[in-house]
Image (cartoon, rainbow, N blue to C red; front, side, top):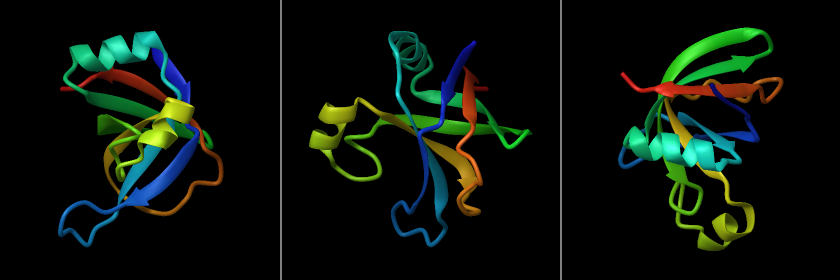
Length: 104
């Protein structure tokens, strides 16, 4: 089981869409990187915030690539971001945790 603290939540827009989606940030380890590579960077996330658990699919990227090109930020932090298949509903009261499962 790959479980991580969520470091931040952000709303993002992609392309011509007017709908913001949720993006979470984590600090990965080698197990996470091996897992996401084996799953083509598509994951199923179990997110727990304030005792509420939700299952949401997501796409994994380096923080240097999404939400915009920031190579210096990634070089400094090593953070990865997960774009969730979920419309943005505002910042949660606490950041919570995320557990990753194989997509599909």
